[in-house]
Image (cartoon, rainbow, N blue to C red; front, side, top):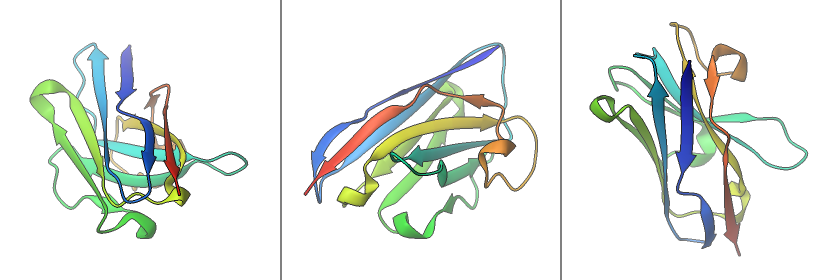
Length: 124
């Protein structure tokens, strides 16, 4: 079994920065991709960023391009989400997820393992 544990959430003022971490533990695991999702109250869980095992060509949803950066350290089984220039609309619970197999990875149904989520609150 694989466990994903997020950390790094919190309360920050608009314009500030946070770095989320997601550490994977459990059996030897080489996911095809890791993704960060977020879910605000009353909304669907949406993809924020995706990174493949190789780390090439990361994907970002339009609203975070130029502000967020996804990266991974395969030796540490950890993926990161650096969030800069945060806006109140970024407020949500952020989840990391791991996909075992190749695919498009844009929806929650493409992922096999999930973390428990970490709250990010951006005040105006």
